[in-house]
Image (cartoon, rainbow, N blue to C red; front, side, top):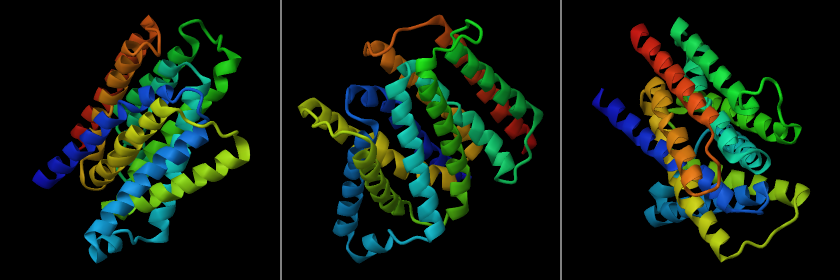
Length: 290
């Protein structure tokens, strides 16, 4: 139990790092999303490879993993972040960010559907509250009057949430794979991002500030955070991590508003409250099941 508690705390550290991802992404300004993806993950991959080189033979051996594990982590990291960056570029930052943070609730549900855990009634109620929160965010309480210009961003944010929740649960099947192996997935994401950028986007040369932001992203929320999350999801309490994950949207939304990159709106407060209640119900039910 002590080791599981420690692993859960390590996963929590990743959640705290991710709270900065939205404000950092918006700080990249006009940089195309796939270019941001390629550069930030390239930084993370280089740091991981440098660590392996410093450790010598043992460091390189830690990068070995089954193809299934590599495919899952690479495709999940690429798909999630591509959709997340697209969402923040094509929809209001706060709304897109909070829609993306339906993944903690989905983790609890997927733990039952994919992880063999019985899904309790409270978990379904919690998921329904998350859906209501999502609808409120998209419509801003004005019925079904959704701004068509923002629909691609909203869809991208919700799709990112589904991908990340599924990955977090399925990742437990590869608990024997060393956490350092995530470096190879980061390199794969950087390559896929570069290909997508060259195919679909026009390159924009980052200025000094943007290079700094990309470096910070690669070191923190797109780098170290994945090492921490990999360890936490494989060896920690996945249901508790799902609940604790709601610290991220609270801190993330606060950072967006304080930095002036988003305007506060009362609907956001209602949505956060519903998401938190849903998370509490989900984890309470999960605890009752044990």
